[in-house]
Image 1 (cartoon, rainbow, N blue to C red):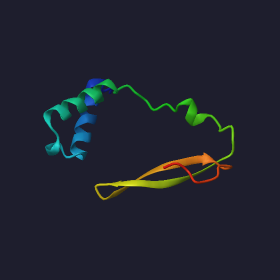
Image 2 (image 1 turned 30 degrees about the horizontal axis):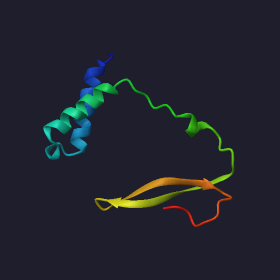
Image 3 (image 1 turned 135 degrees about the vertical axis):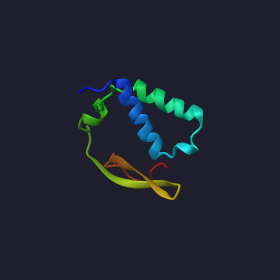
Image 4 (image 1 turned 45 degrees about the vertical axis):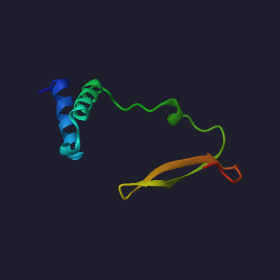
Length: 90
């Protein structure tokens, strides 16, 4: 049985709201969440060329913590040319 994309969007929005504590959201935030879910209901993740093209130079990368939010570490992946010499920006 196929589900209507609007129903799927609404269910996704409700699940997100439940996970994000609906009581802390304003009416505008809820409406924005529902509109966003509807607008992206048919989307599928597709990598960009930047993510799928091999680097032209040798690189090194590592996961780094760049901050904290609500007591949780914010992490990302930092990549730089392996021949780069410090000091680095940031």
